[in-house]
Length: 147
Image (cartoon, rainbow, N blue to C red):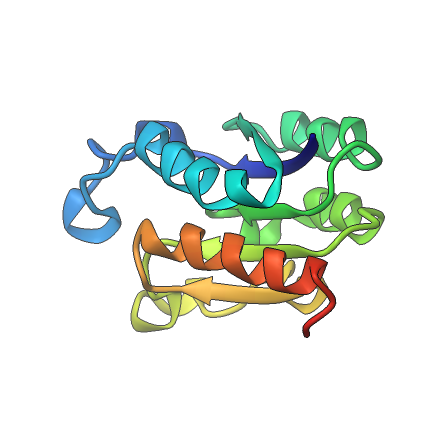
């Protein structure tokens, strides 16, 4: 079975408890389950990695660059200045989608630019946990060659 990488950055391990008025009430486990259910019929299993440190996320990208078919990446605040993560994703040879639970452009000015987005196959913002499911659907679409 092929593997899809789900990569979540700083503070995303406490979803459901962290500022639910911004990030919603679903936990990371809820999101992982929804994404796994979305990709399983296409023959994919989900590998979920969450770290609060950029170095650990970079290591995960390197370790799984050849054994995954694509990735969903929520870098959290690393979207702003995660240059090391950006460089790791630049070397990731599969399509990947950047996801943010909140609409970053409706928030503070410092959140309005992602150093990662120019490298991504697509970006989903502001749709809460459902954005991850949409990113999974988009990757399935790209994988099928329909893009």
